[in-house]
Length: 168
Image (tube, rainbow, N blue to C red):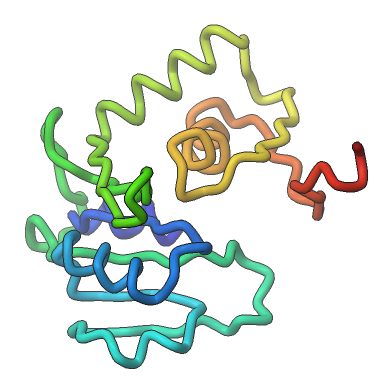
């Protein structure tokens, strides 16, 4: 809901992988031009931002770091109107170099991706999805946020183990 509220206000949202070290997260923060940081990592007191909110690490919410950049317009009751090519979501990858690289997504891009999945797999409100992808990836964001939002499907929300160590 935080992401949707940020978009309604015209903020660009950036999600970072939890496994990024503090240096990688600081570099990504600088790349994104963010002025607000919402995190569960208390070691970010060395990073300069206008506003930082540290979530309770014991809270059951997703444990990802979220950056909100400079708002693109004044907030209003009607909400911000995103253009087809305007960056609304930045996902980061460390690639082969270990340096964060921002991957920009527009609202249009995310809607098209989600609608194609919904159509291809005939997803509807009677379906229960298990999304194993991390939320900082397009697959994870699409599966955790966009598909339930657009299809009214349910998301399996019980703990599960992502490691195959007990399976192999």
